[in-house]
Amino acid sequence: MGRRRDSRTKVELGDFQTPPELAAEVCRVLAGRGVAPRSIVEPTCGTGGLLVAALDGFRGVERALGVDINGAHVQALQRQVRARGDGDRVTAEQGSFFELDWEARLAELPGPILVIGNPPWVTSADLGQLGSANLPRKSNFHGRAGIEARTGKSNFDISEWMLIQLLGWLERRDATLAMLCKSAVARKALAFGWQAGYRIGDAAMYRVDAERCFGASVDACLLVCALGGAAEAAAPRCRTYESLASERPRGALGYQDGYLLADLEKYERWKVLARESSYPQQYPYQWRSGIKHDCAAVMELRREGAGYRNGAGEVVEIEDELVYPMLKSSDVARGDGAHGDAAELTRFMLVTQRSVKEDTAGIERTAPRTWRYLVERRASFERRASSIYRGKPPFSIFGVGAYTFAPWKVAISGLYKKLALRVVGPHGGKPVVLDDTCYFLACESEAEARLLAELLASEPARELYGAFVFWDAKRPITTEILRRLDLRRLAELLGRGRELAWLSARGCGAEGPALGGGAEHGPLGGGPEPASAPALGGGVERG
Ligand SMILES: C[S@@+](CC[C@H](N)C(=O)[O-])C[C@H]1O[C@@H](n2cnc3c(N)ncnc32)[C@H](O)[C@@H]1O
Image (cartoon, rainbow, N blue to C red; front, side, top):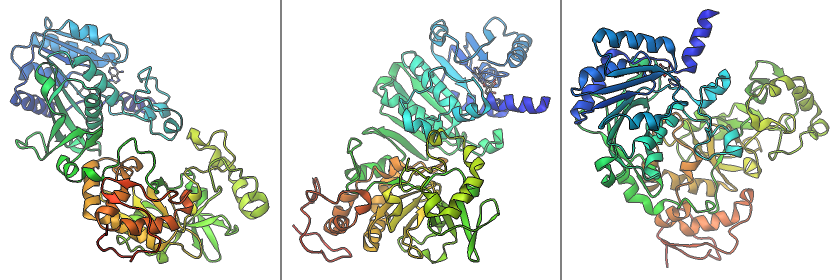
């Protein structure tokens, strides 16, 4: 019991101390970059591994401050500091990052300041599940609310919040921030700082083997950035290094036109295809997520004889009415580019609604055996933690609408480390649905889906997405990134603009109104919708 509580606290506090060799290597890298602090601060210092390595690694340190929420860690550091004879210049105190008046404490310290650390690698959702209060009081710092908050988009890393606060406090001091953190956290903090116009100077990310150092299978780095002082003139760029030992960068990420970019060159080459962020709709296509139900044991089925077997292994005898063939990310990734084949489909999904909030009570009449099946498993639905289902009809799902039932789709996996693309057509006379690890464009015809797939597989599309996608992220592709490509401009650039306009005018019933008013005139030309069908399959655009 005691051990269980210990490991729970360890997770809650993200308590994984930096190994001494890594701490020493971090300080060597910083010294190599010319960092020469008079003050050192370690805001979540634990037993002070990085703080002590910094005392050893830099001459001329006059003051050092370490703070940690864990009193035992702080006492261990105090003992070490006394034993080293550093008691006069080092303060180690117990306190919470979220409570301390950091601005006042930093103001007491002579510059240059080095803020070094390894903040807890835990997310607000993890803490929510543990019922922990180790969170900032006002945590909606990206301004996300409502549905985004409830679908998990407002989940954030505690360390991201800490880094962003530190950037704000330090941007007017002569300071260096050096933090071991998830690479995704480093990128988000930098993007926040660049967007906010903070004085961020020379920035770098050195990849760290988190598996070896912390037993964590996540892409991690040492983020180093100079702040204040000469930082004002620096371009929003961050060099990336393969490891702490690398002398040469392997690339650079940056911030431009409101986008955080993984590849600046690719963006420069293809930015003409980037949709302005204010553009209201993806003409006339909208990237959608697949269906979310959080109840695979009941909702996901495999065909068995004349019936089905559900995710819990039970044989299920229900009507076919609400059962749809289904693809998951792995199926999409296995598809061969633009020529997917629905023949091998083995999975099915029970789709209980045609739109979000639709009353499910009618199922009792239209499919009574399905209704009984659902009612008998009501408890599985009631156990769903996500608040998106609260106050909704029983057996509700999410991410469903007319687009779900479009006969053709161009699907992309959100999980894979490549642009895994697949054309999906109907199967057994029914539209194929996708689970919520996939994204898709809804199409009315095969020709429309195949054209879109060809466009998305083209070099300009891949390069533009390559500019935006960080492949080491847990879920590298998002609808937000997919929507940044202007499909209409891409089609025009590839000489397929009229074809797309013609096909989408005849399709997109699943999406709402057809072209309505003809094609828009973009900077690449375009033109009105042709009266008759253009030759399909490409060709140079005229006039
Ligand atoms: C990943 S460990 C790193 C410790 C140390 N900085 C190192 O590099 O070895 C994270 C530390 O954050 C501390 N911590 C967690 N929440 C905190 C909070 N709200 N305020 C201060 N420290 C906190 C934990 O006690 C733990 O020692």
